[in-house]
Length: 371
Image 1 (tube, rainbow, N blue to C red):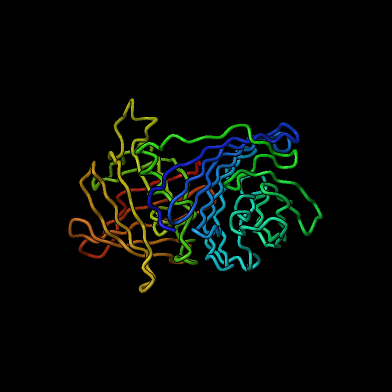
Image 2: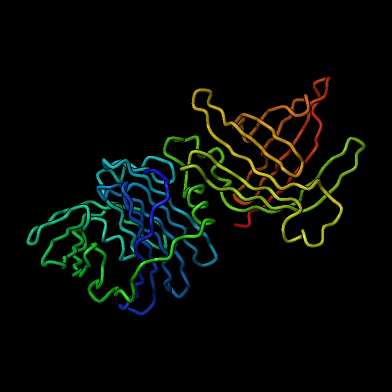
């Protein structure tokens, strides 16, 4: 689905009246190419606060096409991305999800809003019913499983929902847009109305940032995808005379451009330390865009540094347990590599090659995950 801006048409608030332990705040954006649901769910889960931010994008036939979920619970932040080709084939976090074959809708287990997806897609006449397969997202595990479900339209604005595997049934009262008003005493809508337009800043972020990698990348997404999130650490610059200058820095990564590229923002000294800068590593405030070229099997890298005036182009990929990128700067070959890679750490080395073919270390960044 195209990422062009859509008009925000509605804003809604539900309360989980079953146990009084949750709320959902959602926005519905309608456009000629489809509909997007996005929102925040706040619930008490097993005695701990759970926050889930989600986005569900549907095409103009109300088929779920893209889903992203970010969950914070018990000190851990986790993400989930689903992509659907509209014909029943799914990808989960960039990898094929054969177990979801045939599912046409997503069902977020904590959300009443996603019941609107099959209701609008099926367009049942009163007195008729249909059976569907949905990609059911369970919380807090973020496990995704196929679920057989039934919907029957039993009145002008009333549906009976049934889980065909557990025999659970519930009545749904909906509005003219198929959005739940009352969900069998489990969820109840508290408020609704037009939403204020998003700020220009938010519209820019929405246009740039993607919830996950594009399915076009396939397995190549894993090469750099593990970097998504935030990192902080020690930055060293090694001068030719042997002097080592040190500072701290921060590094942020995210998928962009409909998931076809990975972009970062690199800041030295970190914003935390910027108020009282100390002598140390070179000042850096720049960005890198990484994109994959399938023909060559290499990742193409462009680093832009407004503070230093550098624009470096490199390419490469995985070499054993390292990621190695080669390029040129000021007429000399350069090599940047990720090594000592762990779940919450890595080392990033920058080297330059002399006329004799020897590599010497110019910079070393020892980073640890912070988000």
